[in-house]
Amino acid sequence: MMIKKKKNSDSGNVKKKRFLITVNVLGSSGPLRFVVNDDDKVSEVIDSSLKMYARSGRLPVLGSDFNNFLLYPSNADQSEAMKANEVVGSCDERTFVMCKKQNHPRMTDPRSDMITRYRWSRGWKTWFKILSL
Image 1 (cartoon, rainbow, N blue to C red):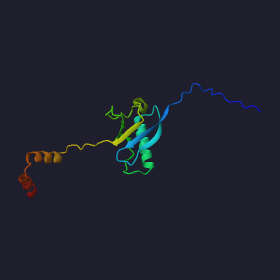
Image 2 (cartoon, one colour):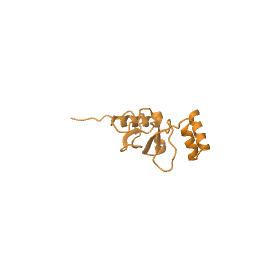
Image 3 (tube, rainbow, N blue to C red):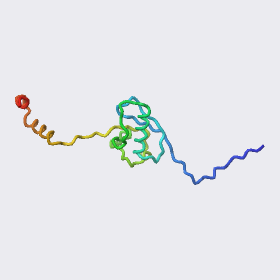
Image 4 (cartoon, rainbow, N blue to C red):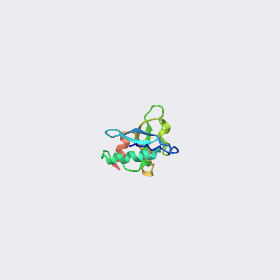
């Protein structure tokens, strides 16, 4: 009995490079590790990280909107976050840090009045006058 091996005639098929990445989430107990394709975008990696984070029941609860998060390569050369449409394999890094975007509150009229009033009146006597009104 002779066994013939099939030749792989799909030489035109290009295999995507896959690699293991580690994502450290700020405030979490430990890193997330999973396999991604070389051409996956940062937004897809953040989305996968959030799903894996929620599936494992980790705390604190982060949410599910990937637009509220930033992904940083862990090397010291880059201090800027990666863009959402950037390819993960372009930075030659396998370890990342993910954190929530900081929402800066907008200046509203009552808050801006309070700040200007505070700047004009820093003494304790002025504060006492404001509190007694």
